[in-house]
Image (tube, rainbow, N blue to C red):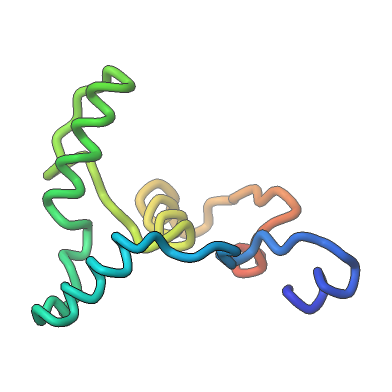
Length: 108
């Protein structure tokens, strides 16, 4: 996708390519975590503190009450979120409409 975009002067929206440096606070936090041995996979549906913070924001900003333990799932990205959602709501044999343009991994 990157090569195609480069050839035609397009914008590659299929992957994250930040064009800025990470904030120093983030870099320092990552270094501290590594030095402190925080090198394990997190809880697969999201760190509890993060889910609690999301639930609080949703309640404060959107006025929607939700439980972080049962209503919030944090994914590693759009692809994981998409497949988790589709697996939860569709059944084998169901038809799904995919709008174009789409991320190449979402195509049939």
